[in-house]
Amino acid sequence: MRAKKQAIVLNGVSLTNPDGAAINNQNKKRTFIAVYGNNTLSDGASAAYTKENDEDHKAVLFSEAQLIFSGSGMLTVNALNTQGKAGISSDDYIRLMQSPTIKVNAGSSAGNGLKGKDYVQLTNGSLMVSIAAAMAKGISTDDYVLVEGGTHMVTSTGGVAYDDEDAEYTGTSCVKADNYFAMTGGSLTLKNTGDGGKGIRAGSYDFDETNHTLSDSYITGGDLSVTVSGREVNDVSAKGIKIGWVTKNGSGEWAKVTGYAGKLTISGGTVTVNSTYGEGLEVKGDLTFDGGETYVSSLSEDAINSQGELTVNNGFVYAFSSGNDAMDSNGNTKLNGGYVMAICTKGTPEVAIDANTEEGKKLYINSGATVVAYGGLESGYSASQSVYSMSGTAGAWNALYNGKSFIAAFKAPSNISTFIVTAPSLTSGYKGVSVSGDSKCGGIWATTGISGGSSVTLSNYTGGGGPGGGPGGRR
Image: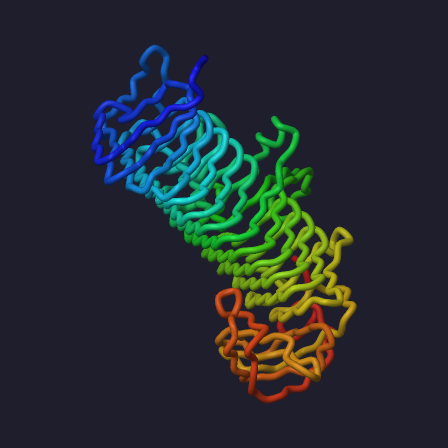
């Protein structure tokens, strides 16, 4: 009977192969890499990675079989080659368990940091990946990435280059999953400074076409932080999180969408996204908030954008944009519950909360939603509870009151003191309140420990786009 698994124990090991892989596992048994002590694996800058008996060595640590990392030590993998080879790669899946620390450093002419063809599952331990090459991916898979626990970080500095295989320009991603991205626990910090770079890129057209389905991405727990600061180059834009795909006829802003797929649901955990030149959170299918805390900022584009419907049922959401809409949907936008703060400082025709009215869609504010906005609402919105204008204190805590108790407090931006507000049974506002309870979305929302302040009256809001409720709407 053929054995079903094997183990490689690394304990104080230092291996360098100047011509290729330091470890090349061609055995197709499930392989455990048990890490103890401090260990280092490296190739060389001039490594040719010559095939042996048609065996393709794809990384400094390469395996034909599943790779499961365990133990409690440290493993550092340095990919110095100029052949585009990865740090760690498996033609099956890669899983990180127990408490090892895995560091992968991929140089400016190497390839991906870590690639598990079937999937990548981070259950525990610590994974730290650094990539520098154009088009490279920090964590990559042809299927899904699942983060369940542990503390992980990926940094990318590479830019855009022409991909001969796909016949198009391509940028880098800290995390790339052709099917879906999921997170249920742990901590994942992503930083991409390269032009055209993305924090997370999940859901490709090719996967969908081949498998006839694209699974939904989801976040139910954990702490996800994404920062991107690159610019658009060769039509490759930088985005914090991009889920799914879209096809269009024509070009430019008014190109007709012919198909799209890729959904995301956030129901727990904390999500923080900061993008300098691109959209913060872009979902090509439906985007749903069912819980958790989501903070998204973009200085140039939409903070939050969905090609399908954008729905908030629960949770805390903060969206800020100084360059476009704060929250934008090409379908309906439905605010059914939860706490939403949307700030747009760009000015007309951009708005705080948008929907695709040109194609008969609408912004719906339903009973149960608590909303604070600056920059106007989509013209023609529908509200089942009263919507008001309110003055407050810039750079301080303000609150909404129902006649008996505080509904919620919100921290105003430093230069904004007037708001559009709505909440269940809202009767008045308060400015200059104090908050001693837990705050949400990085100190934007609070629902407990609210006290003090002075009451302010509310006036009916009847406007469309623009801070003061004047005419406007979608571009």
